[in-house]
Every structure is written in structure tokens, then in C-alpha cells.
Length: 274
Image (tube, rainbow, N blue to C red; front, side, top):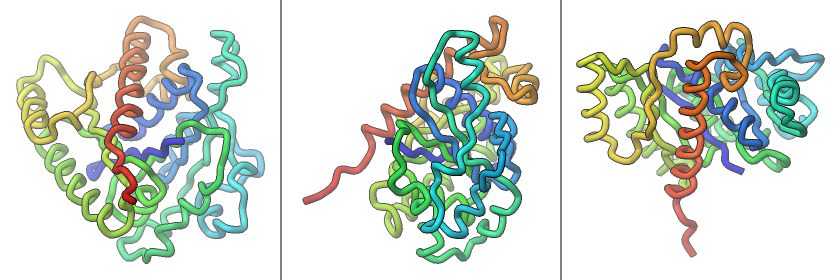
């Protein structure tokens, strides 16, 4: 099982959109997937249509990680039923550990080592998933570092703009420091350039800059700006289930990116030393 944190130092770059796009691709590919919504805004839970019926939100599980069983509190995304109805995909798995504002109590810069292990403890021993996607808040505070401590890889999302690129560089340095102190097996899972406008001279310049700065960590294909993405998310639909050529093209890009993310995360993982 690969556990990947989707992170960004800068808000508004489409981090949650990338999380749900990859979840849609994983569902289409038949990869049993769990999405952990650590962002207190819980936008991923909304986009995935998570409708809990008595299950605990992730913050409640973090409060007592050794006394709760994650399997009892995940919510099945309705995307699973749509996949079966539209494409005949049976026995697919896409679950959500849904988020909420309560998780904000852990989004502090001063969490100790024990607190940083809370999510890892919640995820410890879970079975039945090939992929865990952790949607982090747009900061480097406690929740993001808690996610990193539970992950094998960190996927960064950036727009091709000055401040976003600078934030990505700072996040890369933070990953290296965190890896040295807390998580020696953590590795970058790549960088996704999101909301790219192919007609923008500024975006073309920043993409070239990102290629020079990050090399093969900058994954392809890049994700273009999608006019109806807010409509897709607002309807709590997977992009693979949305009609129209634009949605099909976007879904195909996410299929390619998911394969790149999984391959890069696997290949860049530090080897255990004897």
C-alpha cells in the first residue's frame, strides 16, 4: 500500500482538486483507495460526496488512535455506485475518512513527536487498500507534518506562478528536513503543475523554471485550467463520470498522472539499509 500526502504551502492552487482527480483515476483503474481528508475545510469530503451515518470524523479518530478502528468509520463515496451504474465496474473501493473543522486543533506548529504519530497510528494495520491519498491543509503546520509522518511519499501541487513556485521550493526543503528528523523513508512523489494556461507567456516561463529547479520531480502531463471543474466538484461527481469531451480529456490526464505518481513514489523511496 502506498500512502501519499498531497501538499502545498500556498492555498488556492487546486490541491484538493488534484486529490479528487487522482481518486477518480484510481477508482477507474480499480485501485482500492482511501482518501483521508485532513484539511479542516473538508472540501475533499464534500467533493467525494461523503455522507456519514454515525461514523467518526478523522479528528475524533486522531484523538484516540489506539482505541478506534478506521474500518468502522470510513464512508463509501457514492462515486462507487456511479462507476457500477455507468461502466459496470463492480466491487470497486473508494472510501473516505471524512474531515471537519475539529481537526484544526492539531494544526499547530508545536506538535511533538507523539502527536505527529497520531495519523500513522490510525492507519496502522489497515487492509484492503492499494492507495491512501491524504489531502493536507495549505500549510506546514501540525496536520501536514502528521500526514507526512504517515506517508511513503509527498506529492506537491503548484501553479506556474512566482509565489507558488517559491512556495514549492520551500516545501521541498521542509520535506528534506522532516525526512531527516522524523521519517527517513519519506520521499517526494513528484510535483504537479496545475491550472496551466498554454497561451500564457508567464506560465510558459515558470514551467521552464520549474523544470530547471526540480528536474524529473516535475511530472507530466501538466494539468490545464478546466472551465467546468467547479461545476464537477459542486455536483460531487468524479471527472471520469462527467459527460463531455473536456471531462474525458481531463480524466485521461489524471490517468497518466496517477501512473506517474505511483511509479515515481515507488522508485524514489529510500531503500532500507542493512
